[in-house]
Image (cartoon, rainbow, N blue to C red; front, side, top):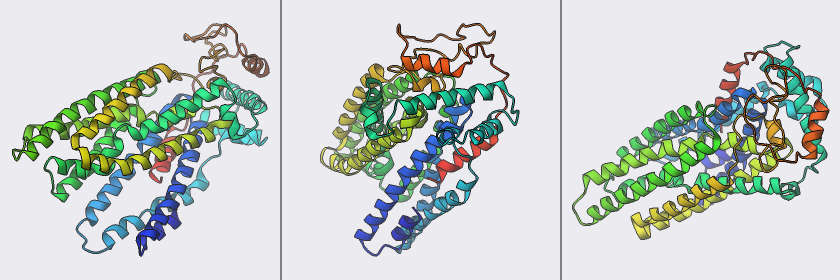
Length: 447
């Protein structure tokens, strides 16, 4: 990424600039895949959803900085108007290179490398504040060991494992669709062609457009951070359905307002009310989108995929997200130029499809550990770890869980291997929230 930023900043022609963007495009997904996986695997179980949600939300911190820098260099009359923002891309990468050596390793990765004591030390440090004998950490460590052992036994660690079972194929389908949804829900239209949209309804002043761009980034950060704090309270399916339905309603309303505004502009009688309505729905889009496709994206991906295939699964998500983004980047301007406001109708149709897909295919992963989800059969657990940690030691679940009539052999082996059938839940330790929060946010800002 440092190399790509240098080549872009000192580009002498279009070909050199494109090569630089390709290099940057290769480095960014690599960081995202490793960063999101590390956060999900290292965070304290109760705070994992918030940590992984903040990882994606912190993108808006970088967006605000980028928008502000471009706004500041907008009046420069030479090539340095774009060279300065290009070269400043080096700074986040340098911060990553410096601080990556201070990050703890994933305990699950250490277990796969037979470095069990190091993994236990990390869990003790960040999940129990140094209380080595904490029953919770011992149970969590045993759960990780047993699950990873069985997972790796059942997996050949190849890309073909993604198609091996019905459960894995369903995970793959959801991942592919989620990658498309995050880029084909109309967000790229606002992110990359906000200026064209505003010019279509009569806002042509570049300074005004830059101000709107910065304000949308700030508004998106506020919405995303707010929603991220709610992921431990609201179920995943509820949030995704609320996201898709609200996006559909927002786009339908935006399409109507856009039709009124553009028709009035072409007739030579600008409709100020319609123009304001278009701006309103552009701002209203942010909380609707952030409700699911921003705050939950990596939280859901980490929860959906088991450890052995998690990096591959997130890589597939990144691949289809980038392909979808590439497609819309070049199709959006063609659609806006040729059919104007009618182009928004295509997004309305696609968003209606998203509502249907989420309703029928997205499973509920709320309130379960990564080890529980790893052995879900079509994402409905054949056992619940609440049995292991029930408050009174009895074999009763403290919450309702859905169980199929025939538990899988892997599930039975996992319970037998762990040997914690009557373990009590110890009082919740105080994790190092300040440390987890800081490096989570810094990691994504540096992306």
